[in-house]
Image (spheres, rainbow, N blue to C red):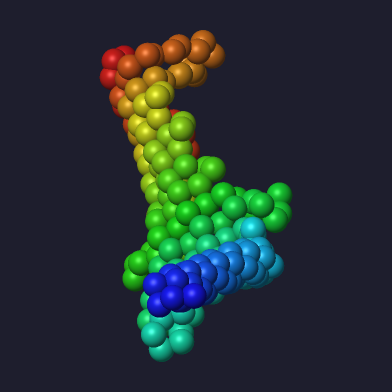
Length: 201
């Protein structure tokens, strides 16, 4: 074997060794990839669950104070002092509860629910309400004082007696007992419900 043949043999052996190393590296990469897929498949269901369940979720600020609470039937947000600012209640847990969104302020509460839109004072007394039938205003004792509906506008005294009416009015003539309906009229009443003035007559 001459020098040329020796060099060719050495070159062939070197090439075989390099090809062998590349094959080992590629095979190792494939094995590593398959192991990674298997590990990811085993870990993913635990790290990223399909659903997160809890009875109560709480959101806290940077000081650790609870600022928001969510349950199956309610959602609350509060300020730094722990005073509730916004609340959302649903009847998901009880048939007695109402669907209601409330905004809390220093002088009262504005609320929207199944009944319509309402405003409550600092004592929890209803002061105004808007429904699909009427707009009503109440005094501090909760007595209805004025109301506007499709039929007209009514004014009530502190005892709940109707004292003035503008709009559709039904009146009874005392002498005959006949009932007359006025589609548009203005009527004033005394505290006993007697008509003291009306237009038209």
